[in-house]
Image (cartoon, rainbow, N blue to C red):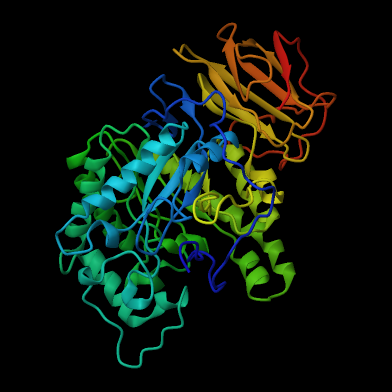
Amino acid sequence: MRGNTGRLGRWLAGLVATVLVGAIVAPGPAAADTETAGRLHTDGTRFLDDSGRVVLLHGVNNVDKQPPYIEPGDGFTLTADDAALLARHGFDTVRLGVSFDGLMPTQGVIDTAYLDRIAGVVDTLARAGIHTLLDNHQDGLSKVWGGNGFPEWSIHARPGAGEPNVGFPLFYLMPSMNAGWDEVWNNTYGVLDYLGQALGALADRVSGHPGALGIELLNEPWPGSAFLSCFPNGCASFDTKYQAAMQKLTDAVRARNGDLMVLWEPNVTWNETMPTNLGKNPPISAPDIAFAPHDYCIPSQLAIYSGLPTFLRGLCPLQQGKTWGNIDAFTARTGLPTLVTEFGDGDATVLKNTLVNADDRFVSWQYWHYTSSFGAGGPKPDPFTGELGKQLVRTYPRATAGTPGRMIFDPDTGDFAYRYTPHASSAPTEIYVSDLHYPAGYTVRVDGGHVTSAAGARVVTVAADAATPVTVYINRPGSKGATVPTGPIGSGSAGGSSSGSADSGSGTGSGSGSS
């Protein structure tokens, strides 16, 4: 089966397929108020655009794991119609899977046609205002073990005679695969050198393509034979070696494209709540580096897909709370921004946990997984009109001309509130208004600023009246509205329940519109 298989973080859970059923998608124009995606860069813990606005990214994954990779019209690869659909629902980023196996199928030889196809998708998405993260994806190291990612020629280890292979995810425990991963981290046969060449070629090909957000160096890296040392408190020794490998690959990318952002994942025992030691020895000092963790709930996966008791789902807040605590610790140590590049497992409660934690911290995310709704076989159901889509499609500040404060969005009512402290910018604050949550239109009120967009605009633009904080409220007509949570970013929220009286104050700017 092409494409969407499970994640290693769904430990012992097996393969997962998420199907969201909704109305049939009809091709249409891109959402109103979208502009071609421009280059982003990091500044402390935030992503900034060229206007100096703080950008919040909401998006999806599109990862094709089987050759031929990224073939337009194959029913998997994203099209212009997909870009329009995603933009209409407010998504401004896609994590596009690329494969070392595809980049360098023959030792030392880059497949330039594959690079061209990748660049084509980047440009298609950029025209709809969507930023593309190029994800060097692997699961199970290589086809040698029934996985994907590293070309067979790059790894010398092979399964032993009679060595059992029970498949994803337990094949990571195979001695032969661990030997293969050790080759990677020790660069025994130059595999990191070749991977650096491949990622450098990719970076060079998207140079001058502002829609390219950056390169994620390696999906879910496994520690190899050192994996047991990662439990129960993380593996400092391995992470030192791993960080050196990430720096080596970062240098290879920057040698070909000095402006491209680079994202580092923690080693994948993170998904079993092990903390990362990245940035401890030594500190991370290169510019435009971002953190790319995942947030999965193993107990939920065991309950849903392995038939274990459903009460196990009650453990998810505990596990996810530890994961987000690990994110907080990394942020405090390194001062780098976070983009959660995978989450979501079909459990609406687990999904909500991720989204509420991300909103609390003003953290960007990319949901796993979206496959083309167009192409082979004609239009498919819009996957965002069901219950999970109701959570994922959100009213949110996608670009803030100032310093973000607290925000809240209630997917049950559509109530939204957001406060920020303005600063001078050549562009206004932009708030995407969900196209799903306001069947009779929406109302908007601004304290400390005024609306500059037309009534009913899909993107509400706001200008500040002074240097004092600005608060924006968006809700359905007649709703009581939301109250901005108190305290600084990251101090917790009402868990998505935002009903209640809005903050007091006169509305210096307002408008309404039909969605």
